[in-house]
Image: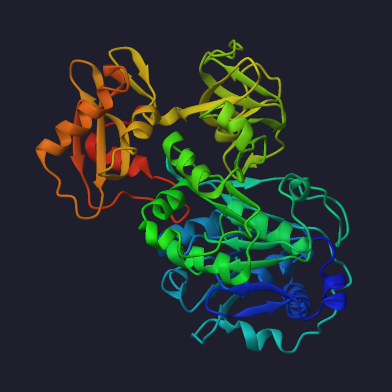
Length: 509
């Protein structure tokens, strides 16, 4: 967010954020309120490098908190609104946060947080014993910048699918705020001051937060859905003439499940680029979205660690179906478990050159993210291969690799096949205990609404997979759930499912 004060002076009434329900935050409001909050931070003793946490649903004040922390030189952690009290408390304690911000919608979990480091608890939109009302607290502070503005950073926590979540901490740049930061995303995705960005996902996740910051830094306008609804998503594109949006593959699936009459009801001609991230996208799903929207579907692969990034546009993807693109940040190396570099086409752990980050309070996990031969390369734990042209193809998370009879099986392959079946809404594939083979391949399927689960349907799905993949890669057993455990961004919490089948036994991986 390079020059918010300039935008407040030149385009004071321009909306920085418009919520789907109509609530609006102008650039003047953003500048004034974030300055007041920065003064409050200083008044309670917060200095450069200190840490705050916030558990805020999609609402305009989310951006106020982000900018205030950023201009105050603070680390700040936006927390999931789905966390329980104990999960939120863990992050507050682990991050050593000294200030917590919540809303009346997230107070249930936030009031359970106990930490001796907290010097202040701020509550948006209401009153509560032990909490200071956000709006009242800011009223007495000036709307001018604090005298010692420094650049801060977000400190995001990993999802914790294989254990406790860990904060991804990067060194703060030793520069004054404001600072023009050349991310390159504006050029890559054609973002300008005229951009109208539709954000359908939770703002506290990495990609929505990143694009919110970039678009705001360019003085564009962000339209925010409180919660993703596929038809409302289309209606908002038409209403606000949206030019850019960022989604996850499960949103693609929900959009494609709309009746044709609904999908064709709205004018989407303003859309210039649609970017998808966060999870693997089945080839069939992406093909359908390209057929629908045209050659404007883009993809990138990166993590909260920002240790590397790949990118591909529609043309490249159609020529290399299934790829997540070529590297834009950090050369790619595919390594075996001993750190040997593998040839194109051979699968191994994906490493990127560079990546200056640490997992907060976890030296072992930080070390595990480095290559074993000390080159300084880092990994997110994903498995994949590159082709002769340098395009990366992801196989799966290393943790979910199935070892059956000594053979490595990556469940994403069969997931991508099964989700294309017309009666499947969602699917998870993982290994379960097998006395003879060690593990066997198992699938849990969420049937399409109105579809009755049955042994016959299970057999049909297994055979459907065996017709399209080598038999050893396909489920040997399959059962059904009304809904699979996914986060708000669409991330599948496969570890939760897998743990049920292992009945307390040590998980593989």
